[in-house]
Image (cartoon, rainbow, N blue to C red; front, top):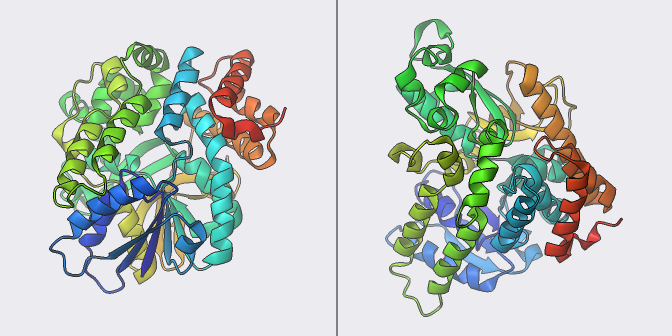
Length: 454
């Protein structure tokens, strides 16, 4: 089976390839095509993959190309992991937003909207090409903002595009472990929302009698409740008030003022840090660099990246350094591999994914992409029943979905009015005037947004 990775020069590609190397079953991926617009980055990542494959006799072969159509033809699966504007674009998104006193994070608030406005037209073009050149392929979307981009692509690919994220997986694993579930990966989770805007409301385990929800017991145990990443980030009192465990990205909503202050006071924004860190890595991975040692250099860079993840949020919350359990692997790459296996081999699996809503959440229409547990098999992913959103959860999801729809309208029609509306309607942007200045700032920073007409 052939896998194509768009954004194949991206830093996290070795995580995916590492997961493929551990899959030796029939029907596995035997060939990987890396596509990227940056030849030097492709060369660097190909060297890391060659080092990974050393000593693995059945390692998937790897080819690289800068020709998108060539990359798509014959693919069984397409991973979309592009970053329009690169990390320099992410750093600019943060800078423009913080100058207006609002959040510039790449998937949340003003920064997420700016990233979406740059990415939607490109993602739509990719979706159309897949439909034409590889109509039987399944597209697995890694590209952020994941829910928004998946919905844009689904308008052309239907249910054959599925978005993935490792945040719900990590949250469920951490909570199940604290609850003493024998196999945390096998726990059944009642999780619902949008990408980077969801809540864990239930944990169920087959090794516990009665089929009861184990989560409520956690709120009565102060030590256990503050022993994992989200407990330290949000605090026991707030989690008890909610009666659920929010996705870590909801810290930007619940503690917005503190987080914006921490971002403004930081020596460097997250995007600028990653831009500089990864530039150093790619500069070292030239044609003259021996393949032996490429993986070790990549892994050192990855470890530093993971240790500093959401550092401003942890500083604002007084949560301290990340625990060792939070640094272990088991994110995107394993969700992606499990998803491919389930579809290619009809090995039924339940995974939290970004898919079209259908009738899962009554407050949203059928085409809205949501993030919920899904049963996956040869025919794709179908949402399973979840408890309904209530109160402020429903309000936040409805508000953010309305913002996403404005971004989609702007991305597909070029309407600057829709773009301003997206900024203005977001819960973390506090003024229509700020929204207008944000669009002006982003158009100045990103020439590619010139398609947005007044």
